Amino acid sequence: MTEELKKKEEPGLEESFEKIEKLLERLGDKEVTLEDSFRFYQEGMELLKYCNARIDHVEKQMLQIDEEGQIHEFL
Image (cartoon, rainbow, N blue to C red):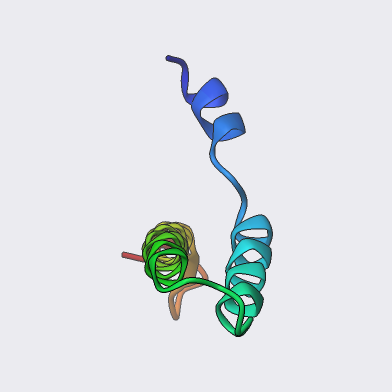
């Protein structure tokens, strides 16, 4: 699978955060069963792990400028 195709299959951070918000709304519904609550919780935790990994990846790609004006990748 090519990197470009893989990126298209992965949701973006905004989309993932929207899904987390919807899961939180569903968890707040008093009509939701205990089993569904656990399933929503697990799905939300997986989305949070994904978001954290994506944010970590972006942070590592950030650039730093040193005192001489040279650009270095932030690691």
